[in-house]
Length: 331
Image 1 (cartoon, helix red, strand yellow):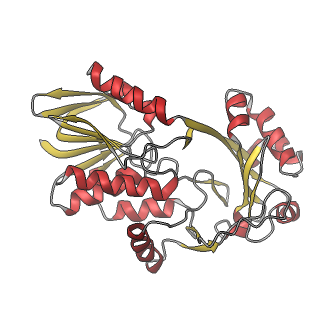
Image 2: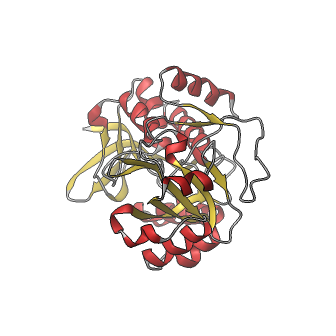
């Protein structure tokens, strides 16, 4: 079967684009190598504790996105959290007039909501794309350990540094490399830890989030105070880009120790490996996003790139990029 659009990457951009394509009446399938959609919007559990360990919240600045967020809020998918977070010295509130939204059941609530609007068989997880090659007027998409698929157009929403490896055509791969070189991505180490309830509350008072200025951490949150975890002391820590780059391959325990100390928490919990986990995000935040919402790299057959590397980082930028790319593919 020759589908209209194949999308690589089931994060916010891929799912938003798929919704636009589906609404136009065209056929679409979204492929992702992970076990579940979402990408860097991720929620994990340690026992009964719940942790947002990828995207922590989002803000709204674009009118179109604001309309969508109002719909999400009316459906109970998202809710206002606060208007800003204190700095590491506890003095600056960081309030700027923009509401910080979160998902009461964890940030993956957005992904589940977007996925529910698509046919179940159109989101194909555990599908690792190994090669995309043009075959006249369409694309042949090779999938590891699965049959190849064909599509009239392809949209790749994976992190920009990963895109060159998809395309068999040297010119397309080089175009992807140039974009990835211009964008650059900062890594992030995310530590999820069950800290003492009283020390977590002291380090992360209401609203439960706190900004750090390095040299180890950039962010920390008490997921219990945030309202998503039933277990007190469910803390998420994000390292700053410099620390992440220097320690990306370091031992988990060594990294966790430095992050816990920087947050002002006790290191005693680290002696129990069932009470903490470390997640490495290699491509966490685009340091220099492209000004375009998407980038067309082929006209016959059509291929484009989208994601939070285009037009602005974080959830809003990813959503806007996916919608713009979806409209381009269905015009």
